[in-house]
Length: 514
Image (cartoon, rainbow, N blue to C red; front, side):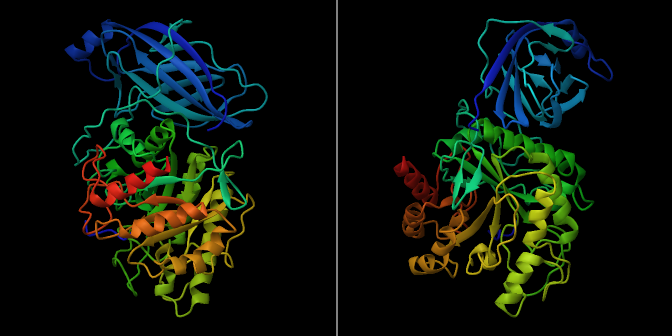
């Protein structure tokens, strides 16, 4: 969308309890700190292997403060008995020495309130046996076996590490529904690990593509458990999260507070929270570098401050290499390689535009080296990541007429076509959908990465959504943000899930699907 100015695997759980003495934190000791460090706190630790794919798994560990005093700072320790090797972790700082694993609290959420919980997660690789650890330490004190029930992994949400200009949601935080499905392509369907067809019905969550580069934060509005619960209450199963390559790569044009590891950790934490609530995450490269001042230019800046006709090779390839390294093994996360290509506005012919789309390099009318879809597929697969990849067509992803003819090669055969459909697009009638879109979705999975209408109404939804349902296509509505829906498709007026008139139509349609 062009912006207005501004797992199916079985789960093994181990639970342990402890009474841990709080150790001093690093740095000067205040009177408050001294009091905290002499106190003791009752706690329990639960361990869950939430997804195992034979060569790797995701571990989710929850620390619960079962006492009456908050835990101010924590370090978790445990050991494996096999060759489990840490790949990446989130919601905490993970490290491994031999078989010993250590996790320290993140700076933006260092405490656990009395009665509260905190969940931290990581991906591991392994071969042979994958036995769960049997004991844990919190702040150096052993947590022995406990008969208490395992705490809910959702009791404490992952807070946004950046200031939010939006009000806190009033929706109550409900427990997660479970792990999100791990997706792959089978023919023209998305399927989970058991081969069951999965059709995505979700929303876009805009903000991480523009807030960071505009210096206002990382997200636009809350990204906590209550806000995710509000989305889930609509019956969705997927959330698309637009990203900014400059912010992910930590380039100099972005405030360091919202860039690099801070930005990456925030995205990882949000994806983890979505997964804990059973929601598939779709990560989309939305704003990119490159000077473009031709037809339909959104800005003249060389930095990632708007949409460009195609991504730039200099930064988009490192971006996708890093994203793929971060999320490989997490097949509940889909990669949307580039939001809305429009090289057709710069090129003279459709052949030139589609060739640019696939092959990149020097493209007519575009003054920077382009990253084509094939090179981005190669970048992701070169890391070993087998995540499903979405590829949007021309004309802001509305034109799929030659998508099949120019489909890139993928050794994993895990490509899906991404289509954007709005009432103001050229392909906005059932006759166009039948002639141009249906042939594509007969061959590959179709994910309508964005859809909506700019009149705050539901007339377009009333014709589009039934057609997509009939064809078995996935769709993600734009957008779960509290903007004026009369100037752009905004689903909500409050992050507690209060719908706009347009949002009410989408919500009602999801409810009718059951």
